[in-house]
Figure 1 (cartoon, rainbow, N blue to C red):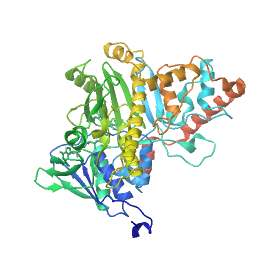
Figure 2: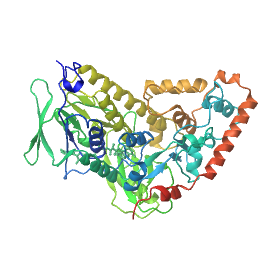
Figure 3: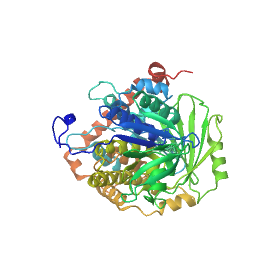
Figure 4: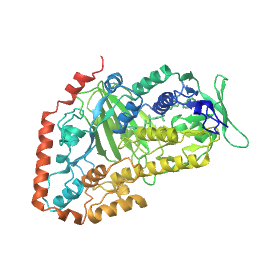
Length: 511
Ligand SMILES: Cc1cc2nc3c(=O)[nH]c(=O)nc-3n(C[C@H](O)[C@H](O)[C@H](O)COP(=O)(O)OP(=O)(O)OC[C@H]3O[C@@H](n4cnc5c(N)ncnc54)[C@H](O)[C@@H]3O)c2cc1C
């Protein structure tokens, strides 16, 4: 069979003509915006059903740098969206009291230092660090030094300086972000229906979804279904019974309390994470307010104590009531099951430390585009999609687990964390690092070598020996290079504008 649309090339395909997205939170509208943008040349009807009765989760305000690729790919102007969703810039995460009370370390985005000939920065910095001859890792990171001084700017063309490669992400208001993407999608032909899915019919033989019935009685059928219904997993779990892999044994927190507060000063260009007795607390500065949350384990504290701990440590006056959220860390056994792909919380949730959830939505969408199906739903494509997402969730889980497993904090919760058995993949990472300070990044693993290095060093995971390759450089040359990088980073940080001045000049939200 040939098809004129394919220029006479046999396609043999049975193309998708309709997509139904259930859920209008961050995941639903990110998916709708992407489909509208990338399928615009195809004749595909895209509908989003979102419920007015069921609220969105209302959090998800910190991101990681690939979010900027997402916006660019959609053709969205960064200053325009930053203004619209009252965003600020994020250069990384400051960990306060995490390794032990009184301690501080910074996990910056982007590169730290520069390689020297064949030797990577982490390798030669570690050699000097082990000899007690290097400054703190943060001092070699443009992002970290700018962040702690409250400075921000986008990268500029300044070859051989760290200003060339400033890496950043955004903090934003989750509801405004979803609203922006909704307008973007509707303007590109996505149909929005307000309604609640009450019933899902499956094909008796294939088990595929045939149609959904709304509270109003309306039925909607589609070729491809995207479940963005949040923790409920209305399609992927309630209808398809896909199953959930519970990772509570690796990630100890299962509750969060959230409150928005007034800003009390200029927004710092980073997320602040502070350890607490049975978990941790975030502070995410936006242009118009601050988002705060206390994430904790219900095994080690009760909700009232967690609430008091949160309210006692927020800086500004509360603007909202405290909202309570429960979750089970883990992932859906198959993110893609039959003719249904789950994205966002419907596909799993690890926990918010390191702000990876929106990124995993983005990855799910990117992989869906890569393996975009026809109505035959090729099983090999689905299997590869599921394996890729399983790998990416697993690597993020390992990175998070490392934060909990290696601290020196006292108390039952932190002792419990230290006793958590490491996954095999994390054990291998730690062993490689402890041996000769080696860190490997595999495939599409989110966190680069220098993220692992920052957190490992921040949490006192130290190699026994340095990388023997570094002996190709003499120590004086390394010392001089380190000093040069430190001085350049310091000087560049001093010349950068304060974060708030940058926002005011380029992308300040209206009152
Ligand atoms: C405490 C906490 C903090 C977090 N912090 C971060 C962070 O800093 N960074 C980050 O990347 N991620 C974070 N996340 C995750 C992030 O919030 C989510 O990944 C993101 O908001 C996507 O959510 P969602 O769209 O999947 O679900 P939701 O926002 O819950 O949206 C679900 C949608 O489905 C609709 N719906 C539900 N049932 C039905 C039905 N039967 N019929 C029709 N519609 C239905 C609802 O009305 C809603 O529109 C956090 C999560 C938690 C719990």
